[in-house]
Image 1: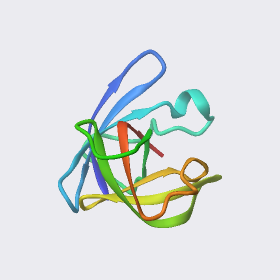
Image 2 (image 1 turned 135 degrees about the horizontal axis):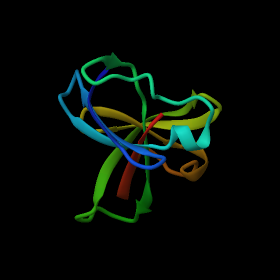
Image 3 (image 1 turned 30 degrees about the horizontal axis):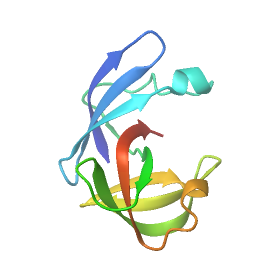
Length: 119
């Protein structure tokens, strides 16, 4: 569960800041739902709580480096909407990455150049 802390509107996208109510982690997520879908998240209000899933984008790194984070794969077959996703944990927080990019990975990966999107 997340609490919406703030929304920064841009021309056609938004930057959404969310607080994970379990861990306290603050997430800054790019929201392009108004551009890519007829269904978007304009209904969300600052101070309200929502059940969200956060999608990560990044490159698989061969090894740990100063721009990577260790992701532990906990479920390889999650469906969110129409997308097949892989559920990963970073520290104590759950995230989701596109399944098609990571089918050959065993149990842990390093992602670098992380980009978050609320789904």
